[in-house]
Amino acid sequence: MVLFLFLVIALLVVVGAVTLAVIGGGESGGLPDAAPERFTDPLPPDRPLRRADVDLVRFPMTLRGYHMGEVDDVLGRLGAELAERDARIAELEAALAGAQATAVAGPALLKGHEKDAVEDTKGDDQ
Image 1 (cartoon, rainbow, N blue to C red):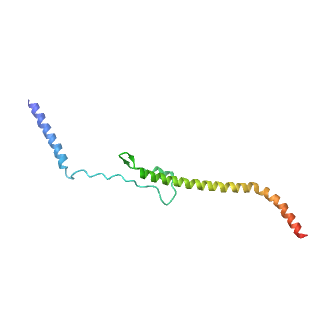
Image 2 (image 1 turned 45 degrees about the horizontal axis):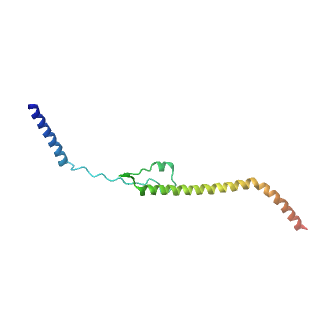
């Protein structure tokens, strides 16, 4: 009987202490509200993107995943930069192909024109 009474008193003390801790909140009051996560865009606006820039992108989680607008914005920026790079690469490859074609076919083209130029100057002398 004494042991039972001791357990009941111990239980009341524990319940009372927990109740005071929850209601009273201690010295600081209640827990502060957690600030919601906000997306901070680490992508640099003043230079082309690099692999490390893309690796740094982290989206805050929401109840059902990620904010679609934030993900769409980043994917739109990446898509635009990739399209710009693809266009620049195609432009440079076309210029290189043209330069190579001129370098390879240039001497052969000039040989035929040299004969015409010599004949034209002979005809002008007469």
